[in-house]
Length: 379
Image (cartoon, rainbow, N blue to C red):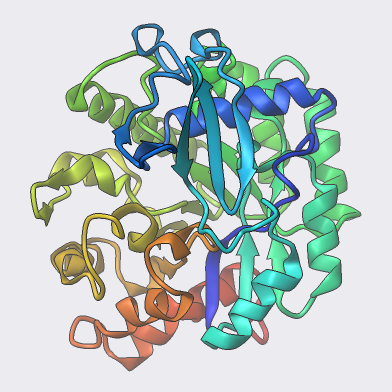
């Protein structure tokens, strides 16, 4: 089985994104696009530009820093804003996303063409919250799609009972298969408590009893205009928190989404992950797995077939092992760089690093087992 462990479907980005207040979705979308690493340009002449029209960088990447710039989802995967009568744009989705939505039918059509059997839908608030939309995608294609639940991270500590109830409904009634937790949204909403601390314990205790995988997304987000060293320290802090969390809940299966924060470790034309990253992460835990999403992070830096990532992949094989590495793509966003098939072939082309059995595990077997699909496996 070929199982894409990291894909997306999302509603029209010109709507409310599942938020009760459309303005709340708009500010989540604007802060997400302001901080995105994709380059911006001036629409009139495609002259290079930046994101300064979207937010005041001196205040950090926060809601308070956002500027009134008529920010909008413009169509064809593009987001636009206006400053002093000039329109600016940033292309975060591929131009094929004409109506700024990506329904399950579109994903499955791409899966069919690329030869992908299953995909797991991930979550992020700037693509929409709420579990109904994802549950409907799963119901439409139950043999092809599974989905992760999302509970607003910023509500877990102040509203633990409601957060637990939302997750229980998503798993027990809506047919979702795990939960994703994005650590940067706590900081974005002004919460400074560690997410493994006492205020989060009721929620995590409930999660640990559900027998579902948890997909963590640590970001290295620092909330202010700081350099690479500050981002690395913040990222290492998140990884250490994850290690403490796994010490408390050692039986819970955990997946590090996207893999390690690859863009933090670019040095010119090379990718080199320092040892302190592996020291901070819970790599020794048999229940800790890492996704391989090189294309979405580095596709704009390295041409296909991205041979520059191979030394890092070899290192992951040695330190973590093929039994805990999982291929994913970030479809459809990754198509701004590589096709779906190319994302698959980047990993398939590393048969000199992994033998046939190991490759089968990475490309689907590990996800199949994690998600309870392997014959004879227990969910």
